[in-house]
Length: 215
Image (cartoon, rainbow, N blue to C red; front, side, top):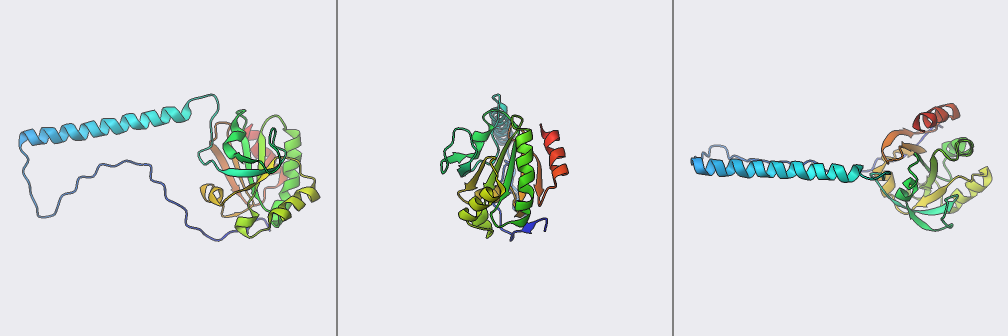
């Protein structure tokens, strides 16, 4: 089995566009005096300029700084392997971008057969490219019906997995990153931009190719 499908969930719709709407009632006509027309034009022009300036400021704030942050941040509890973090310590995903290295985010679960199949390959690549990217495996078993926290910890021990792992505190990350099957792997640049997302099992050769392109 290359993928464990998840049930469809309604995802929140985010609206990022500003609009100016002029509503005219059918059959109703109103004449504007020249002075009123000029005032209306001035008002609309001012609003448009304001929105353009606001958008420009927003773009500048997102691109400033040497390193970036992911668009979708989320809280998780560390299992193991995270520098400076104790087991069971609560962290934010964005903290993993502090050094500016690319990040590979892997959603997995303790009773997910394809997750089990690909994790040793992740371990091999994490050892090989140790200083070139950050790998984080986030256990979402309790939110997908694919195992408990103990199932996840047992799997880590069985497979001798030592790369950074943790468990999500809620299902927000599943929604934000469009996880519709397990495992799901998200390849991200050091600035937090999503480069590619893969749903389902990744074979070692394909995983290596994607990683080499990323770093």
